[in-house]
Length: 299
Image (tube, one colour):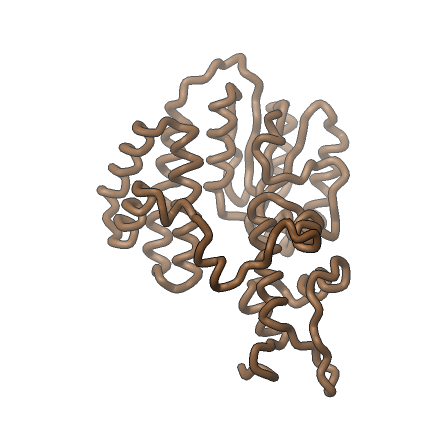
């Protein structure tokens, strides 16, 4: 696709670069006034490189746990500067600086399953659970995702690494000693959501804090979350959507879960994940607490 002028992009190109829908780009443009496209004589809007960088920055801030409104405010107030090729390359990602993450990436790149699994065990016992999650697993998975998205890694390399991490985290949860009288937190992906690793990480964080956990699973059938919550009566429920698929496949899902939360005030309901943050920017729930901050869940 040709750009209309050097350094400018049509909205379809911006959508492809940022992996944001054209509708969402227009909404952020109108609601938050963070980007300022130019109209050509033919009526088409074109976006500058600065506009694209701003959108990428907002997306990055959302992935870090900010709402869209908070991200827009940070940019407008000059607290956060838009990413550029220069400063993006200088971001101090743990995957670039952490020796153990680099070793894991090397084993994953070579698809050495046994060595990757052995290294996961070594780093877990070296760091302890909390540091292992925050300093090893989270940056490792982020870099795995980056390499798959850019085409540096094949689908097989990404799947092998992610599956090994998932299985290892499940094993830790099963063997973790916890007081059976501890309060219960239930975690689940939303229907049609298959990215379960973030929920396992959250539940392990909960166990470190002394909570008993129950994982419903990935892509549960519609209504199963409500049924299990009614049976178990947990103190907290953590729901996750890394993609927009749950809301696209089930347009009334958010409304149904929010109404369910209203009817169960004895339980605190939390909804997180990049997909949830993007979708709820326009349809904020009243009874589900929207957050990507584990500390907010377990204050």
